[in-house]
Length: 67
Image 1 (cartoon, helix red, strand yellow):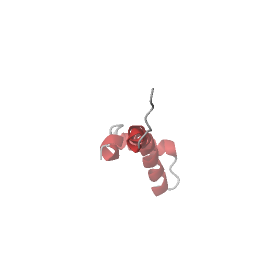
Image 2 (cartoon, rainbow, N blue to C red):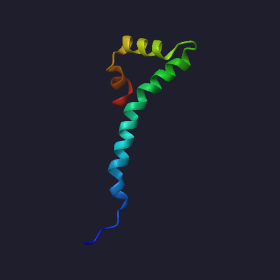
Image 3 (cartoon, one colour):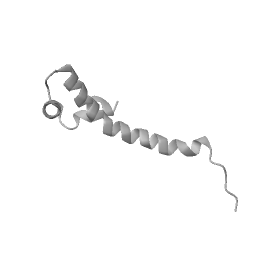
Image 4 (cartoon, rainbow, N blue to C red):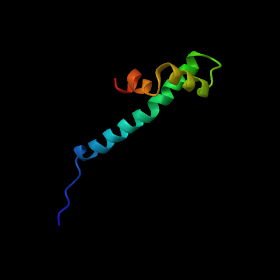
């Protein structure tokens, strides 16, 4: 039984998958952080509530994830 040596392309799918999942998880957190930074005194909960009221949960996709 011979084992072949792993190539660089063998690691490509898992790395791309990890990058995709990380972007989906981190984008909403980054949006809330940006809202808090641009409006001093705004808490994370208030920023999330304001964003969802203005754009809905689909706003995270429409405003940036789909781009």
